[in-house]
Image (cartoon, rainbow, N blue to C red; front, side, top):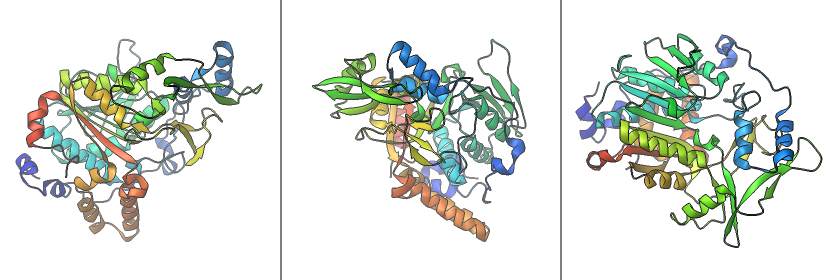
Length: 436
C-alpha cells in the first residue's frame, strides 16, 4: 500500500497506485444470466399511451417546450422511459463507459482517493452519485476504496435516483439487504447495506442528500436533463416548441414560438456574459440549478465533484436526438420507447459554476486524457498479465473503446469542481487527470 505522501511526491505515483488493488480481471454480471437480480416488483403501466397524454396536453394548452416534452417522456411515473425497465447494456438502447470494463470505474476511484487525501482525508465522508444507472460505477469505486483501507465507518453511499425500477436494480447489485422506506418524514425512500457494512441510501433529489462533506460524481446524468432549444433570428432568441402534427393523436412536429419565452429571455441575458455567438443552442435550466446547488454544497459543507458526460465546448448547435436499440431514432416518434438526450454544453456548465464565485473549476478534458493521466495504460497491462486468453481481447478492445479519439475517447469530457478555499492547495498539488 502506498503511503499518502508518496502519492504526491512521486511522478509515477498514480501509475503505481493502479497496481495496489485487484490484480484479477472482473467479469461483469449480466442480468440475462442472473434473472434473480432483476427487480421482482411489478411497476404500473399507463392506461393511456404516453403519446396520447402529451397530445391531449398540447391540444388543451398549446405547444410545449422541448424541455417539457423531454421531462415527460423520460420521467413520467408510469410510462417514462427510465421508470419501469432496464435501458442499459447490449440488450438496452445504449452502453455506458462503466459497463465497458472495470478500468473506467477503478481509475475514477483512484482519482477520488487521491483528491480526498488533498482535502485532509476527512472521515466520515459521503459518496454521492447522481443517476447511478445499474450501479456499476459505484460498485467499481467502492471495490477500490475498500482496498485502500476505508471501512464502513469511514463512508456512506447516497444515490440520487428517480426510477423505482433502477433503484431496485442498483440495490440488488450493491447490497446484501435492502428495502423501501415508508416513513413519510424520511428524505430517503430506499435503504440498504453492503456486505462490507457500508450503508446505502436512495433519494429522489440531490437537495434531500444530507449536508455533510461529500464526494459527488455524475456519469451520463446531465445529458438526460431537459433542454430548451433556442434559435436566434433578427437578433431575438425564440424557442423551438413541440406541437401535434395534423389530426394524428401520436404524431408531433417542431414549431417556432411566436415571440420570446421565459427561457429565451433568460438565455438572452446570460449569453451576452459568456459571449456565445451561435444562433442555435440547447439550454438546460435544470443543469444550471444543479450546478448552483453543487457549488453551494461544496462551499458550505466541503467536498468536491466530478462530472463525466459526452458533450462539447460550446461549439455545437442541434444535438437533441433519440436512441433506440443503439441506433439513432426520431425523437418525436414512439414517445417513451427511446432515450432522449442532448450533448452537454460544458461551456455553459463552466460558466454556471464560475458565476457562483464559490468553486474552482477544472476542465473539461477529454476522457482519453483523463484516463491516460490516471495510469490507464499501466492498469491495462496489470490486468492483461493476470487475464485468461479469452479475457485479454475484451480488455484491450474495451480500453480502446474508452480512449480512442474516434470512439469514446474525445466524445466524453471530464469536469471537476472544488470549493474556493482549496485554491492554494490545488495550486501546489494540481488536480489529477486535468493537467499533464
